[in-house]
Length: 246
Image (cartoon, rainbow, N blue to C red; front, side):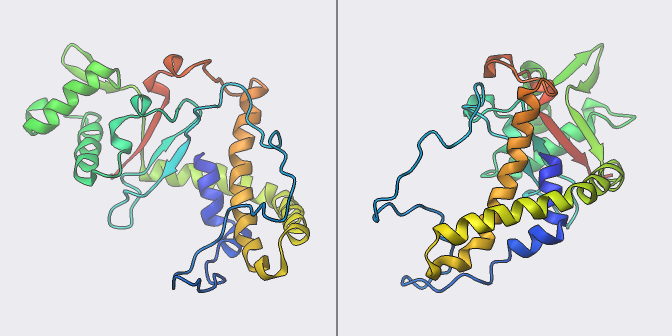
């Protein structure tokens, strides 16, 4: 999911496809893309055409920097193959409706990996959240020491991952991405009325993004990624990746 997000932000093709300057002004005065299928002309829709393999019914993979501050990915997080859509399986930090709580959780999670971390340095609210994290298995407490059961990367580590792994991989698959984009475009040219052809690029961008998710699904189906049978087997240590501000 982190790579899919990286591609959408760094592929020249995808950056061009997702430009939003082709949206016409609608009767309500707004500009947006129409993403629905109009069946008024008796189109036949294949209800089995959507691929969703067994075990993915509640899939909710997220890769977000929506809570980044000061232009830095210091509150960037990833939720991937182990994550499910039901709220009871979501770590509290992904609740974007409470920014102050997100900031508190991020500060508390990152503070426990500081070399000289001492619980005394936390506020009462942070201490309470730390106790909840230990209770929920997000953080392990052993002899007064705290250890996150998930990955916390520094910004330098994130950049190294992007530069050393993601960038060469994107370069190697770019010809296939372009080929796949043309397949989607041709399909939409034949299916969309000419008045809606301005929507083709953005639909193509969305399809390419979805294909990143399908690739993850295919990898799990082929046994290259572990997929728990139910959300109850999806333990927290594999869920969360945060970026430390330093």
